[in-house]
Length: 534
Ligand code: C2O
Image (cartoon, rainbow, N blue to C red):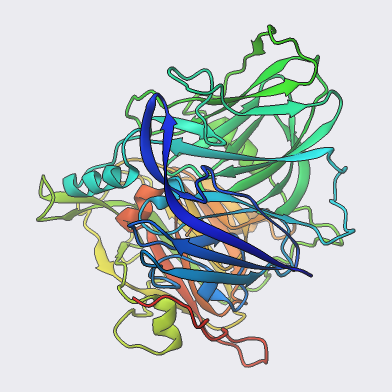
């Protein structure tokens, strides 16, 4: 195994999209940021130097960080931010992981422009469990605001209402040629006839789930969130913020140009022109004059298309890549996820939209939770996060009369190696919305999913404990639920939150604290000497 060294200079860079320019926060002046390449079991060292005016931290989304929570990155959860002028070396090992992951800023809304791919190749000489592709391409989906992104969220917090919807979606940083006022034709995927390409699709979008499609071509899904899946063919991929999806694309159509399109699923009901981002698959030898074959992504509310895609996902579960689903459950948890309304004296209309898990709106601490845990600093958090909703109601029916939530920095404590079954139940309060929930520090198995209220008597009978998809980010369906299982084999403090940035901001987040085990390799390692202080 090798040690890979990278340097991230976080700098401002003037960037033009949709005919207007603004300075954005970037890694090394690039948007999206540079790709990190490594192999399974390699150690990666990234020196992050903060040259901007904002506090900063970088999260390695999907990297397990076994015993190295100090390198996980969420600000005030596992570390204090890297202050302007300061630096921090993220040092972690990709133990037993291979596939497409990514990194992003994990503070404020900086991840809008501070993000990039983390490509982990299999160990040298180990093949993929599918035919070797001719070439690989990273495809990052994102969102673009013409105005300053921090101003967008600050303005929303002041008013207590929802922030403005983005002005465009992007594919590898560009809205594409079919968007009015594009300064660039968008991303071109150049292909050779008959060859197969591995597309590593990453959703860095902030607030919207996306459909992804290539005109005239079927895509074969082979991996999600850096875990191999049973291959299946589809013409549409659904990808939520935080997720990654690897697909094979074979250039088996007549030479020409084919549209690649990404558009929202369950977009905000606000009508804005941010809908479809485009790119082009360009066969070599195609005449410059040939027109692009168009395609249409599913309608914004095409729930059956989305469900069909999600229901098709299964772990590969081969001898070499088994699905080790925990079969016993030590902690059976039931969390409601949704919105609420709290009084707010500084907000324009006296109240503000909030979000909560089991009615707890998470308060960000001012000391990093992992430090408080490791150094036993009192008064930073409590470990009494409710295992069940404090008030029961018809979660997917009419909202209760009291929409107010409670604030707290409450964690849920797990013994080392205990197993967790967690049902995430969406509540339809204020607006029914999907919630892509991301768990740091673990992969989990998605063992069940349904519409309406979870039925603890009958739904578990239908759980898939054989080959459920394994991942780190899962869409909790609007007006429905998902059930996941994982083993708490990673000591530390691990954030769990909705990956819709606005919902994280509003408090749809909590954390698990996993105690050390008794064995020699079952403790959180001590913090590195350059760990930032608050
Ligand atoms: Cu990709 Cu806590 O985030």
